[in-house]
Figure 1: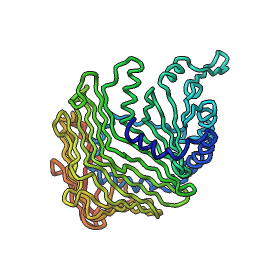
Figure 2: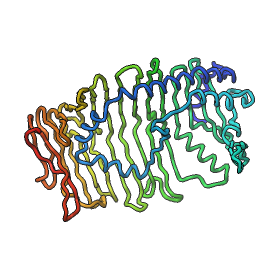
Figure 3: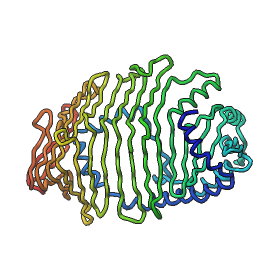
Figure 4: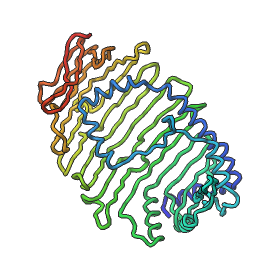
Length: 462
């Protein structure tokens, strides 16, 4: 086993493994408490989050170039996000059902193998329910699933550190432990060790006499929830060790052009505080340098580079405050077939970061945006490389040195202080506005090219 596991064994040696009854007590009291309070914090804080007006004004100003959407497009073709919404669109779960299932089906005296280890029974993961022509259900264990479960030797090892329990998911005859869960009365954390996952993948392939996938995984990811008080929780995602994921077809080099590759530096990636009893929410983003390479399948090979992405945001009393808003210390780029197709620079002459405040008037639900020291976003787009039709114009620069305020007139924004300008290519589609003026955007359709674009005008406010 790895050095970290030997060290773990040494540290926990003074604490004997908890008995099955002790494990069940922790599941019932600690896991139940964390899940209930976490659910209450999530449900209660929804009404306290900023309105769409607060975010909409900022995001529209930041992405007037459209470059951010182009950056995300190739990623969405490689990574599919999956959620489990309920009928009303929200995510939900039953904490009591989860604790009952674990205690009644997994951490039982019958499943205990000794030394803190529990076998995962086929009845828990291999049960299937079928219905006869009259709709009468019959539940039975799938024999093929049960055989596979026995072969992979899926087990759970439990340790006690004196403050909480550590659960390690074991796979294969080597008992590799790619997944760990920590449970205390006010904390629940899940850790995925990608190095251990690689070992488990190789062992399982050998077990079934199959060729191992051409892949290499390294790094460690931890997601956690900490209960700070009644209906008050903090959830977080951390890359404890730098992430590197590579996979390709058999025979292809994992470092060559035909492999998928994703890397991201060790970082405190996301932290969100949810308080169901306070009109306050906070969000911290700290993604480090991240790269993605998608090989040429149908489209040419795509390479994405992000120097980082950070922001520390707080919403309270109708005000969204953001500090350290940044895209890292280098140009964000998207390359197609080895050639740069999109480039994005945020505040290159101001330390590549800014602060922003969005204040919402509760009476009108209209927002005011102020930035410091300024917003200066540059972008370039090669539409031929992207396979796009050349638009009427590209926005190449967005500058805001001061503050803007939304108005009751649709598609109009007022410059409260300083200046606001958009530069385009060709240049005749841009504008420059100063304090006291309003900028309006009107959609124009070209009957010859069937293209549409936004035509900006600057003048007195309506």
